Image (cartoon, rainbow, N blue to C red):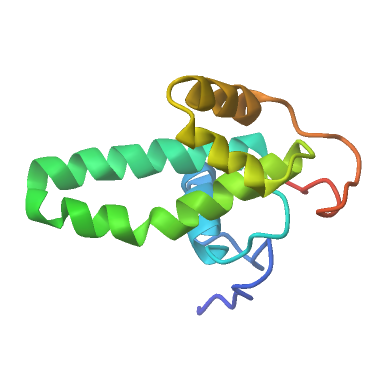
Length: 129
């Protein structure tokens, strides 16, 4: 059976694989160029975990592919961080706070762990997942 999936939508008609947590990673990749909606805290953190685990595996097994892997995931990573900021009703421009040494990273980390805003905001309705 072939599963049909609208790659632009938030949810596919069926799971891509059986692991719900890894589907968060795949969902972020599908939405790589979506900078205008929202992503839940779970989506952001599961994506981050799998990104790091895969990076560690690549460094250990095929270290020469590590820079390519980093480049390929740069846009999806920026997009999910911007969508996460939207989820707490902050502009994506807050991502630029990373250019402030140490303090910027701490502030952004605090933003990333904040709970989802449970109301519709200018970036859309509360995400379903």
